[in-house]
View 1 (cartoon, rainbow, N blue to C red):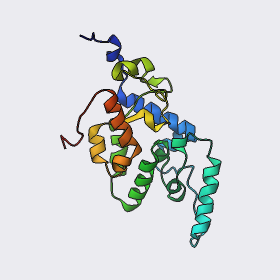
View 2 (view 1 turned 90 degrees about the vertical axis):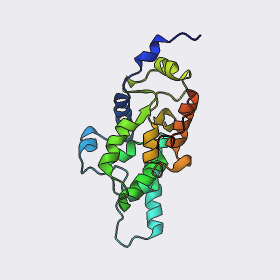
View 3 (view 1 turned 135 degrees about the vertical axis):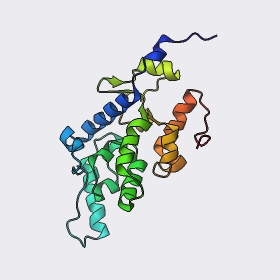
View 4 (view 1 turned 180 degrees about the vertical axis):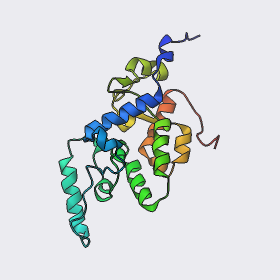
Length: 204
């Protein structure tokens, strides 16, 4: 029989890892602590249209310009069109899931979910398998928990480092992009690595 690994009991608290990981992404994007904590802060990616009657061509040009400015960011943190054209809080920008960011911004405009509730759920429902500012799960801990430490582990700006808990996937399935969403796919991958075959809808 396989002996228990003493490292398996030393995995850090998930919520600490999540906060630290999101803060690391904020620093990557250039979001300061005052910006992050102020409810009235506006994303550094957002660009208001020059006039109320700006046409689609002008909007596309504005989007390309901003994306060019931020092209050195890690791929999963680079701004998508909606981040540039929709006014929003910087907290959205630290999520390394483009499809989730897009759906959140469109959903916010349509008022289809509670923003404050989702912010709380993000802290409880997400796990970042890696380090963030010295916190989180070390590679040795990760090996103990999963039996495998992929090369991207420890990079909060890489969507492949993240997993969502089953209840979070069920609750925000549409916002996550369904089975094609980055976070949904990665969550399934992490479960498979650990040999978990849980049907996330079984306890729905």
